Figure 1 (cartoon, rainbow, N blue to C red):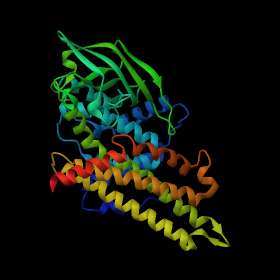
Figure 2 (cartoon, rainbow, N blue to C red):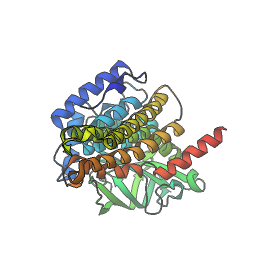
Figure 3 (tube, rainbow, N blue to C red):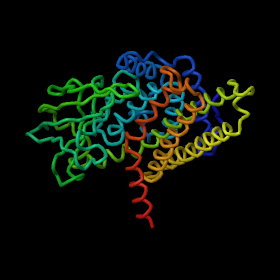
Figure 4 (cartoon, rainbow, N blue to C red):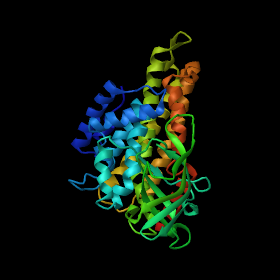
Length: 382
């Protein structure tokens, strides 16, 4: 049984506590789904999450506009990740993929949001390229103005939901200035002529992932999100909101690993007594619990700070993402050790957690990049 005492912390309101209870009950009934066909599984998950109302927090409600509730996003990701990593992925990408539309989209562009919130359209965030992952300013893909159109040419890679998305938010160089100041963001339908799946990518924790090719994809000028040259600011604003939620997903994985470990050491006997009586085992459990609570404090501090109206939470979100993902890796590694041979047996929950956690230390800003972000924020404020 997962520890839920953190819900009594002052970061939360009663509506967050009620959400956590309802979602946990839903997950117990509906998760996990079969993962043998990840495309089909993701479509199923988006449909289920949407039809049952769990995707509503991922995007702006155009009928009742208001800021995204980051605490709700984090609680949802933590809960889903604890039950099924692919369910967390399906939820997260609906938010990340439409974040630019929620924050900067025109009324016409925001018409997509009713579909994504209902699970009737799948979204994707296309920022990374073969030679520009963490270095967004090095983006090479171009968007050339041609009359009333923009023509997009180039590649994007490591794109989650690549190949199954109905819409992509794509960042390309429009050339208003060198580097980061010359990027713009575009809304690209998944069936746009010239948009191709150059390669499907397989990773250790499978989910829909692809390298995309853009062969003179012609878009109307109305596909531009925000203003020309605003692409970097838009991308960073979206990540500012959703980076904390990556830490929340890691927290969900870590909590599950801790829960499984507590059960394991209580039931497994070693040298004639339960493993839990060994001081070394107790030390591991203590370390795991400490890391989980510390990560939770950082994640929900960042989420609360954003929800209280902070324009940017770059420092807080980077700290939360860095600490929670790195410590979750350590917690899960300890869980594997405590499970012995079962911990590396394919199909065991801690084995799957070991594969799930690794990517979170890379995407939406690798751990080393987060250290640079934190250092700059701290030294800039000095």
